[in-house]
Length: 73
Figure (cartoon, rainbow, N blue to C red):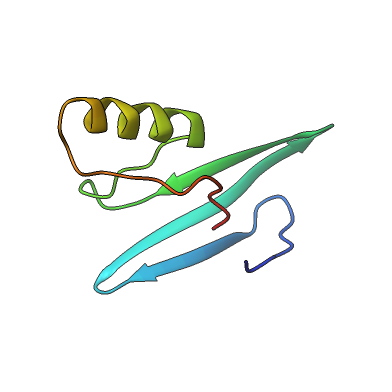
């Protein structure tokens, strides 16, 4: 796991092949961090609990999507 420190207004860049995702720290208040994500339209962005629900529904429908028990990326 890569651990980074960013301040409000700073961002990180994730490059996957020819696609780039930007994650900007919009606000930090108490124990919450608001992130702004800019990504190509064909890159799915979900909160972990939503991604798990989607994967579970696809598996139940005979799909092939699986997620690890712990996702630390």
